[in-house]
Length: 314
Image (cartoon, rainbow, N blue to C red; front, side):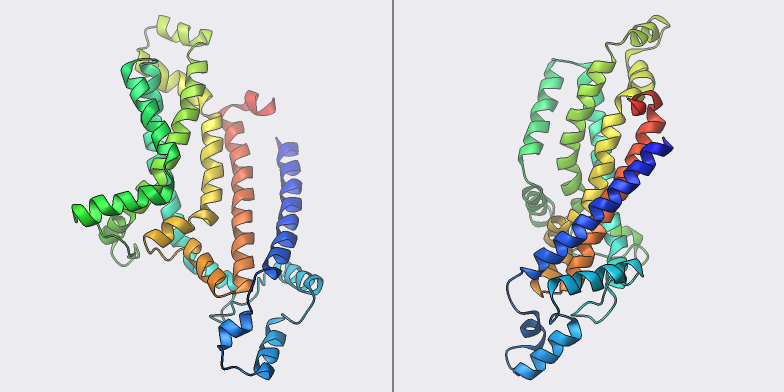
C-alpha cells in the first residue's frame, strides 16, 4: 500500500507540473488586453505599458512560467489583478461556500443512489427496477443547468417556497443557509445519483451471485439484511471511487450551479476572473482544482484499500 501511495504521489506531482505549464500557455492565448479592461478605454498607452510591467505581462511566456512556478513553491500564488489581494486569499474566502455546495450535493446523490440501487436489486427485472432504471437514464440525459432551471420554475416561481437565488452564510443564519442550499444540492445530486445508482446496481448484482451470499441466506439472514450487511461493502469499491473523484472534480467544476443560483463560490469566482482577464486568479483557480482532483484521487485509493484490501492489491 505504501508503494502504491508513493507511486501515486509521484504521478500526481508530474500531472500538476503538466497542468501548470498548460494553464500558463492557454491563459496567454486568451483574447483581449487585461490592461484595457482594468484601466478602461481612456487610459493612455504609457499607463497601459506601466500596468503591463507591474503585472508582469511584458515578460515572455517562459519567464512568466518560471516566476509563477517559483512563487507556487514559496506559497505565493500571485495577486489578483482586480482586487489586489493574494490569489490564495481569494480562493480560501470562497472555498467554504463551494465545499458546502459540493458536500450537500454529494450527500443527496449518495443517499438517492443507495436507495435506488438496493431497491432495484431486490426487484431485478421487475416493474420497480425498470421504472427506476428509466428514471436514472432520464436524469443522466438532462444537463445540470436544465435541472436547476426546472427546480427554480417549480419551487421558486410556481410554488414560491424557496428563493430562486442568493446565499446566506451558515454562521449568519443556519436556517436560511440550508433553505438557500436545497435547490443547488438537488441540482447537483440528482444528476450524480443516476450515475452512482447505475454503478452500484451493477456491482450489487455481481455480488449477490457469490456463494457467501447463499450462505448468509442459509443462516437465516433476510434478503434486505443480507443485501445491506453482506453485499454492500464488497460492492462499493467502484461506487466510493466514483464519489471521491466527483467530489474533487466538483470542487473546481461547480461554476454552472453557482452561477445559476447566485452562490459566491469558487466556480463563480472563476467566471468573474475569466470575464475580467484576471490571469493570476484564473491560473490559481485551475491549479487549485487540479490539486483537489489529485488529492481526492489518492484518498480514494486509500478508501478502496480499507473497504476491500484484497481487491486493492489486484
